[in-house]
Length: 147
Image (tube, rainbow, N blue to C red; front, side):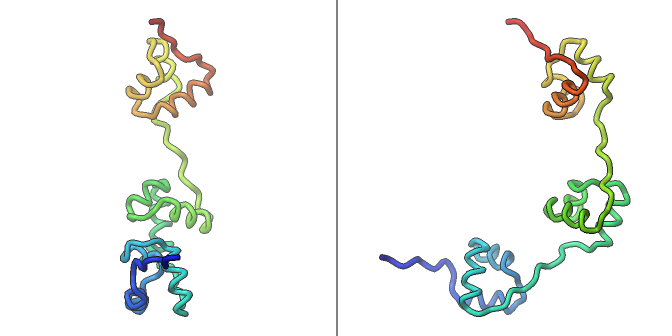
């Protein structure tokens, strides 16, 4: 059986570890998986460096109080949305309500004009899934065009 080819050397890992990088950061630098770094670091007896906070609780609290949602906060901070959502939950911050892109009456009016969900979505600046949801919620049957 042929042994696995090493994608990086122990010395490369040790050097990056000494610089204070954590496993995901080292993995990114070396172009390998986090698990590859984790297992090699353990074999070398190196302690894990904790996760770095990419943003402070105060930054999150301020942006949340300004009415930004998880997606907008993540974009402003240049981080992943899942981390923002988790921290908002842990801090027990109230998530801002979703802003409706259109009223029920606007949807009904477009439906009465004979537009299908895709056409309604284009006019309303929403996704077809959102239009579909609200059309069903209102009990409106889909527009079927005869060929």
